[in-house]
Image (cartoon, rainbow, N blue to C red):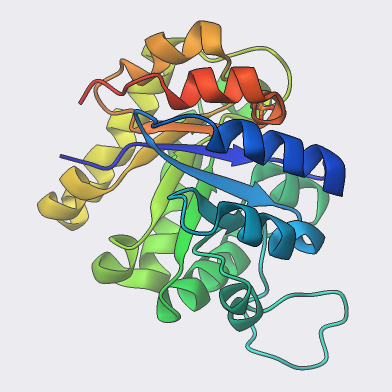
Length: 250
Ligand code: PGA
């Protein structure tokens, strides 16, 4: 049985007042069908760490630098995040790959630094619309996975969560269909099985890209989908709660 997750990615949104309201709304729920984590902007980690303390909600960050310390102005290290109570970190989100020039190698190095310190990387993979329309989706996601797997090996990969996020579905309202999502998740799981059968069965693969309460049930119903990475809908407590309460099939 794999762990199922709903992970909220707040991106560059929030304020002290809004964060508190949102987290308190989540804490008012008795329980969720999935494990729940929140990827919070750096300045608010401490605020949200205090709010979620002891609740079972997991504190996560949106980025990290792979170096342990030094002259990297504006960057944040794994040990800093760990000290703030962070347990999971997004790596390779498409916004970082596209807008901040993150390469497959830098994504792999970040994942490696996190695993080494006992934090969980949430490794994001996904093709652009051009790549999908040129029939390259499979090649792209598998090569993104291969870069991480080459760096981490099977044992390191087993400590990761994967999130398939087609770039064309992120923040666009254009959600991938359940068959499209299942197809890519099955490619990923098959590629993992070639590395290690047990790993393939154990690793959680989430879907992200315009997940809303209305489509969560169908997406989470796919056999190889173990929950979702949620952007826009994670900023609305009623929507996010509804998604957290949507069970995964497996
Ligand atoms: P979205 O974002 O749900 O707003 O499409 C998903 C993500 O970027 O992780």
